[in-house]
Image 1 (cartoon, chains in turn green, yellow):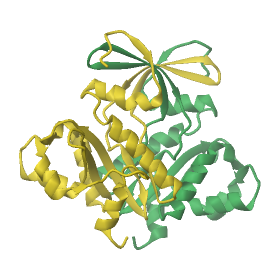
Image 2: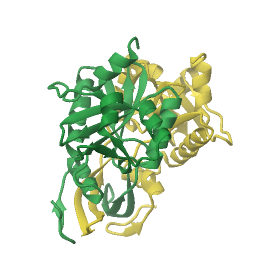
Image 3: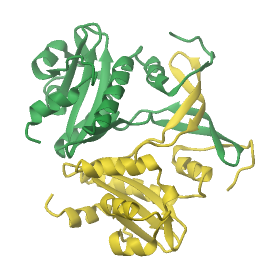
Image 4: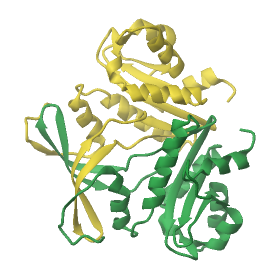
Length: 196
Length: 196
């Protein structure tokens, strides 16, 4: 799926993660993202939680006004997000997380998370928000919820450039595949937070 | 500032609200939005709250891959947002609001708020989030914080297509202009919520 230079292709909105992943890491996050989107939709349908993926941040450099009421963006670029991709509300609590896939069977590279996203997770954690990562090891078919506290502990304790799978197995929570919702990550939140 | 059909102009990211306002209501929300952005930046600088404006939602219809590592959006359109523009975290609480300006001296037209945004504010209120509108009457130089509860009460009680200024004066909270931050809306939250 590497397009040769200059080739155009018509795409829809749901392909953005695919485009973005091609920009840096091949196909990273695509399937996990769509599964999280339908899971969040399901949570909203049953009035359980209101958690959304933020729109992809872009920098617009050219616009057209073909008619008075119409605006067409003619040139824009993807930009680095300053926060995480997902946030929202569950049982009165602020929820905030980033979701990533990796093909590695042994470790999750920290290049997947931008430094300001790490800082953001730290801020959210310090201000009593519920902050975490959802990381899927696609080759292992294992999806983990890693709370920001444990993620930050790891980062602060070592100079390693990746988090080994063993750290996830010991410190993160395995999210089992489901049907409705596909990724029932709020069950982990319920189990940990308990009486909220 | 109405561009004739077909004229191109290079713009930067901060002009998006201006572009969007041209699409429907002339210049609506521009100044208020930038003042809120610097206020939220200030809240982050002093480690008080982490509240962000969401990126503008767009639908991408054409992309170019001029080189392997570069992606250029060649055609995209602004889309209707499904939630409010601002959300974040303050003292462990989920904050969610929409901000609008009006030139009217007498009323705030409900056409300014999309039906799904109203539904969203209702969901947030029902799930113990702190949901509100910030409405500026530019001709009066009066900026109000109207809690979702009072906003929804108004909507449910009448068939009116706009909220009269008298309703704001009686039920909303006047936000005084300041220096740092420009719009200290969290002071209202503090006063009302009290011991959070």
